[in-house]
Length: 80
Image 1: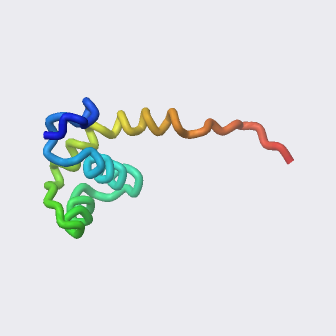
Image 2: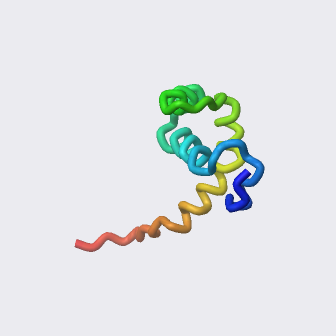
């Protein structure tokens, strides 16, 4: 195990970048977990669709929170 992993990803078989990519594809593009499994398989990795679902349940809210902090808030006022 890589001891330099963020605490959120410690004791995981896959690298954080793989986990985040799978969760991002699943949530952003509304792919099924089997679609994500197939896309990852095309890249030479074997990840079960139930694992992708578990990752989405575990890391989805955290990714949403982190992205919400980075996204610039939009104003409801329009200027012409």
